[in-house]
Image (tube, rainbow, N blue to C red; front, top):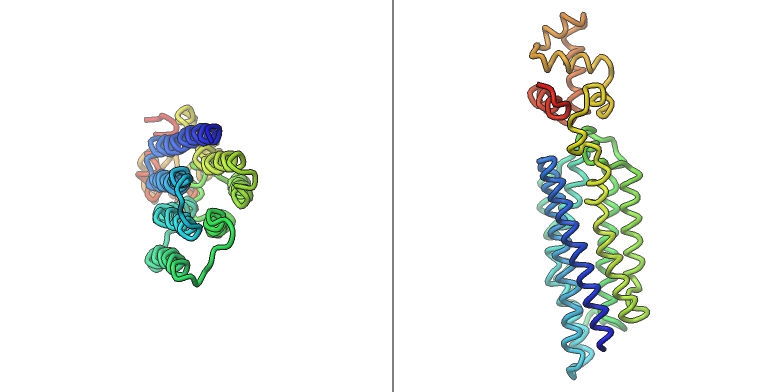
Length: 315
């Protein structure tokens, strides 16, 4: 029993460190970019690790406390279900923030219909499950902890499949996606991490507390992948902010003609003046402006000029 408590204590310290690191990385990303989409990522990490701590460690702590108490198997099973279920709202918010982040970085926004149906759907499902178990309509055979974990794993995998979709559709905001440093390969790598901890957690207690502790470390570590990858693959770091204009154009895949137009915009010229100087039509200038805004993730000429100054250090 002493070795088991020691193993859980070490695992708790490791998972606490991973949780703090995940939230810290998300906060650093937000501080660096100061954009709403990175606030969403920060909230996702906070709610995710809040659920993991409450759902996982709350249940383990309860198990250790009642281990020596003479309680029925039925009561023990109900406790194993009810403790994580109470923390489900944290997980639901985390799923919502993850879906929102994936869509926002690809230039998409949620509809009001989706927002107003997402939360009630999961809440109703959670309480319906509790009700059916309480009434004996659903019986838990075998390990109750494993029963709950497998349900959450299946739901989590479904959510992550929907997280993948925006990255494999036509992106509406290339500039913002580039600033995250994410691409299809990295997103698939993150999903592979989800598959890894899902597979491990599906049989987390096969070898008792040893396999449980290892599974928990893998669970927490894999959920660190998203902010870690964004933080360390994002090329727009503090050091990159002093890139020259040529590097700026290469980063955002700006064409030679678009680069000329950007320079004229930064000098304060109007669309008509740019058209006259470059011997092109006014509509052509407007079309180039639209493509430039899409590539850089800005919405106006002022924002574009500010972005160029910020990244190149020019005045």
